Length: 83
Image (cartoon, rainbow, N blue to C red):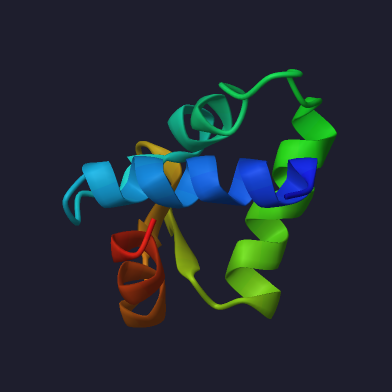
């Protein structure tokens, strides 16, 4: 498993643990940095972008107060349940 795969797994697990509650951007990025060796913020951002645009496992929404929030898509929920 590559480091990017480890980051993606960590991100999906964090969103799955939130039980459908959208996660603020900073919290999701923090969840992506709990693996070892610790990835850079840039690596986490790339993983988030891939999960959203390529894999279609997560969806980001901009809110006026909190800013960017993330949640699993239906496809992402199925993937996260398998982790």
